Length: 517
View 1 (tube, rainbow, N blue to C red):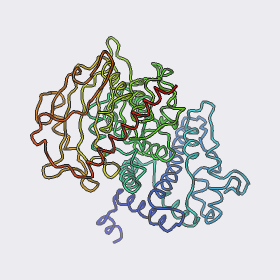
View 2 (cartoon, rainbow, N blue to C red):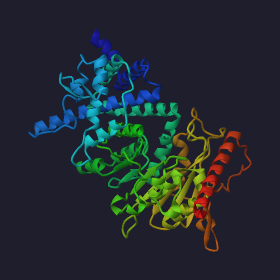
View 3 (cartoon, one colour):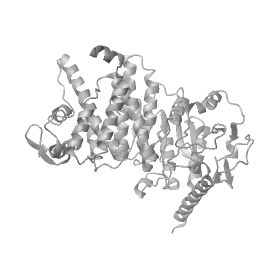
View 4 (cartoon, rainbow, N blue to C red):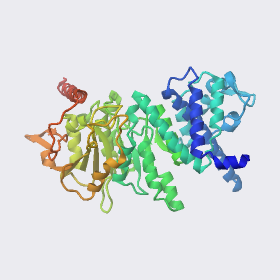
């Protein structure tokens, strides 16, 4: 009877894992040390991270044993998941002490460093192994739960995830991304590293990375572009050699903030990238002149932070006449520098970058950066996104720049994507869908001017006076659009005015720097 009942009502992997994660979040809500999902997700992530690593290491140990080889794990006893997480006697204050304290009584009864202190101290001889990734991850996070019994309950739940099951990892990866989106929606300051999935998918599809090409996101955030690229490339890997190429020399990223760095690592691990190559330093920290050909890549896909400002030490890494506190403009320079140069018989590097409207119309240093892009690269396409695509993080209209090294720009194609009929803009509850890019995708390889598409010769963009650049305005309205006098919401108008004022302030600051004795 019990067996027939089970067959009549089987619990799917998705249902089990969804229920497990929900239980963990319900338990965490009872802990007074956590403040909303912005705290609960990092907790859930680092616990899953350690369980994932132990499952992987056990599998590697088994393979080495079968080959009669020795295997040296990244995490030693008694700090492996199997040593402490499965020890039901380790709970309450003892569990908190083991995780948090610099010195504590270990699960084997000896005295030693606490778990986090141990993990942060890991270091390899080369500085580029799993040990170093673990150390970097745990230097930037802490355990915020203050109830050791609730923490024990969460650990027991996570112990029920089998990271050596392909089906469970696949299911959990999709579930994890939905949790990421919830966290980002709930946390205002997290929006700077979130790009809506339809936009990410469109950008990846248009660049169409091929196996053997190197792909970089220097502002990786939680890894959205890298995950989408990995999935795109995985379909092309049919042999052992191709799979090794996918795993070892395809996906690269940079993310300086500890929390998104951890989330990015977990996101990529869950999707099947065995050793994510994510730099934990500021991608802007290296002087542009020191970036050589070996550091150039085939493809860059990224959404640099909007409106950020960098410290003086970072600005010194850029040419004197290209220094600006505006983070987006610094990243554009980095991207141009890190794209592979076109050579006879080989294609130059190509990029797809999200930028705010202010970048398109800004003058001064911004104009000089755009001039460089137009003269040294082919800025072949600007996709103008509808208002509200990045709600609730920002109301500033955004654009997608597509450019490639190999030839200077002769003309720029613009394609304007409009919201569905009857809607003026997108919102958090009514977000953009991937199928709304269908018209642009169909147009992409067979370009003609229409109500959504137009082109502009570069001579109409770069304006000079006596040989001196005075403007490089890419903020051009659609000349083919019939309804040019449509109503603009006051909030949108104010956002546009504030963005323009911000650009004016930056320009005045740059002028002051030039005239300062």
